Image: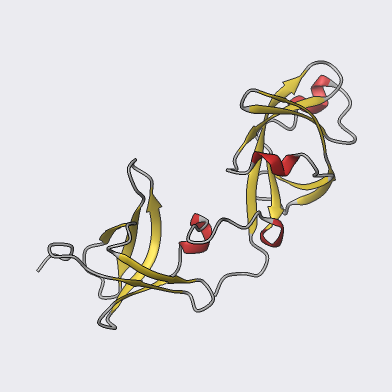
Length: 175
């Protein structure tokens, strides 16, 4: 089971913007509209515990945001935040549409074949292009199993029970 307080990265402070302490934020979310109404976020840096901070969106600028963090008033203050991640608790994450999942919710699931065989644990999600590929660390310490994230292979994902049900197509497992 996953920790109840999982953090979701929604942005990263890239650099200062101007001389008034504003920061340029690189978005790490598929839901950029979420920044419109945010007034608080957590700032996370160098393995420290995330700390609560005020937040104000000043403007959107192409694929970046210009934001104000209370207490950051100079360009030097803003420069000191470079590389700081902007995170929110998992409970505040935008829920994805039905049938779509966050990668961090998938990693760690127990993977079972449709025959009931425990294949292992999902340890990584690759994103090479056309579809994602799920990397399963086998239960029997054999070679990792690569599963394309397609409907013919991934039959069911149940985050509540921590299980993924899959259909193994011919040739997926080395004999």
